[in-house]
Amino acid sequence: LWVPDRRWRVALGAALLFPYLFLAGWSPSLGRAVIMLTAGALGYLLDRDNRGLDLLALAAAAILLADPLSAGELSFQLSFLALLGIILLGRPFARLLTPPLPRFVGLPLSVSLGAQAATTPLLLATFGAAFPAGALAALPLLPLVTVFLWGGLACLALSFLPVLPALAWPMGLLHRAILAVLQFFAVYPPLRA
Picture (cartoon, rainbow, N blue to C red):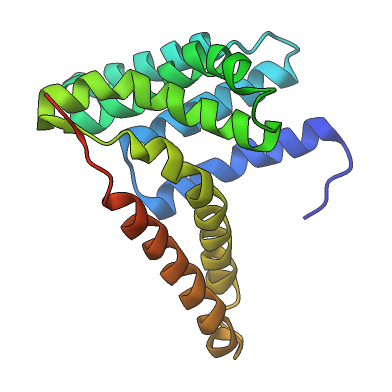
């Protein structure tokens, strides 16, 4: 759906987050994303600053007010730590990685490294291991998973038409590519606590 005015696109995008949350089901990471994106959209519509740390704090406060026990859940901790690492460490990593690497490689890698650096201590404390190769695995996985998710949504939207058999082959190919990337990076040794 094409909406010419940017403010209406932002408002429409924020409104569509809630049906998606309903369809996907609640999780701390998805709840965080919906709260942050909705607050960011509202801030944009009201011409307010949208600072990442402020939006992250707002999402944490909202989730903890609704369910204080979620602070003890590993998914809550990892989700917020990963985004905190991206916000605080992403730019410094980007300055180190670009220009030696092209921007289309250096920027996604810096985001992945920021999340990895922030979550590694918790992973080591909880599981006794962390997988630094995950930062590199994110480079091919991000576009593959994005296309796979959009393809899945397209399949859902087109499920009433007789086109699903034609979509099964490319979706299966994407699925196999994702698994191949995961298997390739799974052989790299973890960090041990």
